[in-house]
View 1 (spheres, rainbow, N blue to C red):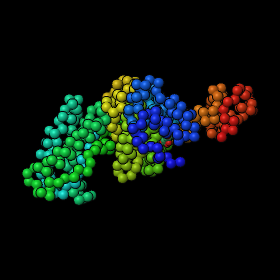
View 2 (view 1 turned 120 degrees about the horizontal axis):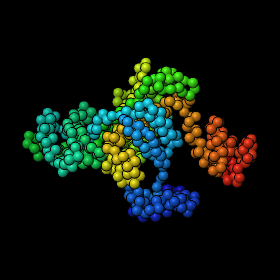
View 3 (view 1 turned 180 degrees about the vertical axis):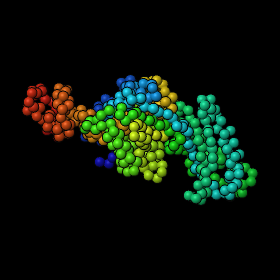
Length: 459
Ligand code: MEV
């Protein structure tokens, strides 16, 4: 089948027409269309809003929205919303939050809020001349962007610094205008990009018109003007700490001392080995991304930034570190995190709006602290399992419902399975065998549930 034919002018079609056109590519077009439609929001105004967030929308893609209650951060208790599809992430965060709630909670602090933007340009003139004129150019940048910055300044933010960066060792004539910004409660992409594009125009005009430039120096090529998602100075920290003896005892008969030692070794592994570091940091972003998504923030920006930061010394490493002593367990997570509570989808998406309300209408700085605490909760939970029972025990317990749903188990079969697997190891094979045996009345003490409606072959 030629999948591109019939898609000329697709973007101009109505939503209904787009859906019908796409559904022709399914083996059961009518059924597919029905299914796609079934995920439309029943309130057409809400649906219209969702459609308008993006382009060529034909339906919605649902993700579970969960909450973690009793997350104690700097002495304040939060109910934290998490949007994530992976089973056991919310449960792991909740378990860690509960563990730390009796040991002082999560201690967080913002280490900086500074964002960065760059105008990349080529100018083939005498370098010193550009530097000599830059103080005047900077003045013109500030005056020329006043119409953009005045509101931000009223809120306490604005442009913090502007510098000229010589990049000519990479490419003849390549320079950057590198600016830093405080965007207050917004993530700030639009504000920063608007300022940068204005800088670019001013810069081009300046060299074209100012006195002292030779004819060949009047030409300046702006390559691009764009914020950097790498914000190493927009950063937040989370610490969990307690006397080692207060850690308690652990599954597998591990003492608090042994746990603390093994935990530290696990973090060391993630510091020195990029393979482990990637998985370790993925576990951190399980939590952070879920909060970022629930609050309508940009998880791609957050991830890209975090991974660059993790590789800042040339090797990709763990974002967290151990600072324990012989008697104190102290674990620190430090992540760059540019979040907003105004702008973008944060106040437009009805669920993002509710998430922010549930969090008590936090500032951007407060939201950063909630997100890092959940990142810590998930990472601590993962390491705690990994160095004691292993990850699969808890993970498969949480995954049980997915496996049961795969086999189209009835509600009665599900509750029997949940009871059975409280005392038995969950695996895909074990659940399949259990259901087969159950349906054939082969499990002692459990009568065959009737009627059996699930997949018979249990593929
Ligand atoms: C799974 O989503 C995340 C973990 O692999 C994280 C880790 O290994 O630290 C459990």
